Length: 280
Ligand SMILES: Nc1ncnc2c1ncn2[C@@H]1O[C@H](COP(=O)(O)OP(=O)(O)OP(=O)(O)O)[C@@H](O)[C@H]1O
Ligand SMILES: CC(C)(CO)[C@@H](O)C(=O)[O-]
Ligand code: BAL
Image (cartoon, rainbow, N blue to C red; front, side, top):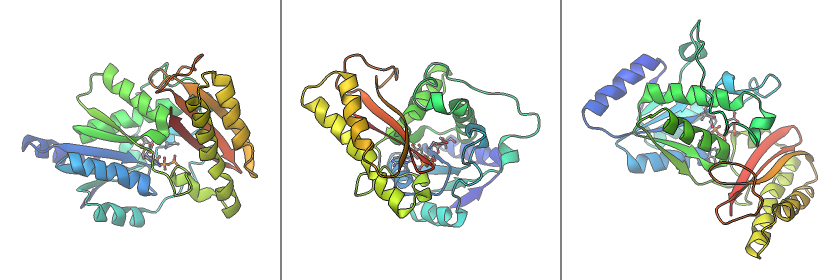
């Protein structure tokens, strides 16, 4: 596995490989890799000749009072996971490589960045779209892999790729969960033992919502109530930011719930903000 820090060097390397007819798969991450990331890497391995993983904690997508400084980082550990998974190139740029002096170009996917996390993390999806467009332009992949755990992010990126005619196939991958249902996330690392236990109520809440829908309920208010009531049982719950039932493509709230809609939640367990969702 080759580790490359310089964007131009990676771009030249990949363009050369593509001239040789190689198919390139790309998995963008912020590092502190877990089995959710590994599932994306394995999917990329199975569908491409060359796999590129990036690790970059993108300051542009963090709000002023968010966790940029304490976001977990362990490059050596990430490196050995990537090596073990057969990654070909690990892109590990510095801030100044991604945002050199004078940087002033941003991308905004206007409507899909509103609602859900967009309401609680102003500017977040502008930061995500901008860095992902840069990464896609640097890596020039045929396929790029994103987890459905960050459902709104996936939709924002799919839309950006479509709107800007990028010749890239975006692949959405299933959520990987711990055995008790908690969606894997680098931020789970912040949780104390008691908070980790409380966090299991998020998945339980989503399951309650799905169960109610499967029993015939179509009123989003009732389904939301069932989700909220269950999540409220979490002893160390600090705040439920949102529980919404949305259309899987437009992310607009539903009046009548249908198969394919998505229940999306964001909660604080202690000081840790966790998101999750479930397709109905
Ligand atoms: N449990 C998971 N299952 C599937 N994909 C995941 C999972 N967790 C993260 N991903 C995906 O991995 C990619 C990189 O995400 P990121 O590095 O931010 O990890 P994360 O665990 O989501 O971190 P965070 O705690 O910041 O949300 C994204 O496409 C994200 O959706
Ligand atoms: C897509 C991404 C790597 C952009 O920084 C990040 O938002 C993430 O890890 O989900
Ligand atoms: N996993 C999405 C990146 C973020 O929360 O900033």
